[in-house]
Length: 175
Image (cartoon, rainbow, N blue to C red):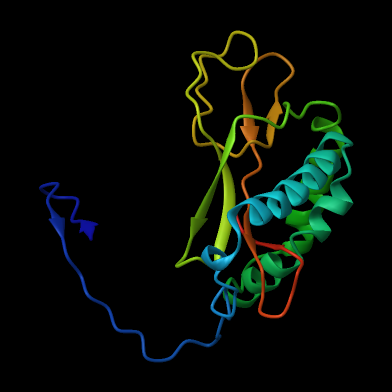
């Protein structure tokens, strides 16, 4: 649905796209995570997140960017104007400078499964009245990977994890 902009009414628009210049695999070949033992699945996801937490908290931008390889490859394929090298360099620089010892404790999360069982993520499960000093920031439903700003506030590092057929290793596929 789209907003027409004139009267604020939502209009339904149906579009048929017959030929795209790319064909993304996305998570179509992912394992159905709903079929996993929930405790074992959560342990695997916790392990991935703790590794990611360590990378961010150590300010290791290069390791962080390497984890985004699959997601970046698809992004490059459908966004022709994207300069991924420049974006990655900026992200590496930001993480190296701003994340070192600034990642909040890994806590208060619950596992969420999306995309017909093909993607998994953790989200903060409780509301907060305040986060990181003076900021009236509620981090409910954020990723539990949160960078605290020096004075107040922060931002999260949200990831959707994917487990391809025949693999035991999660990869980041989307934010």
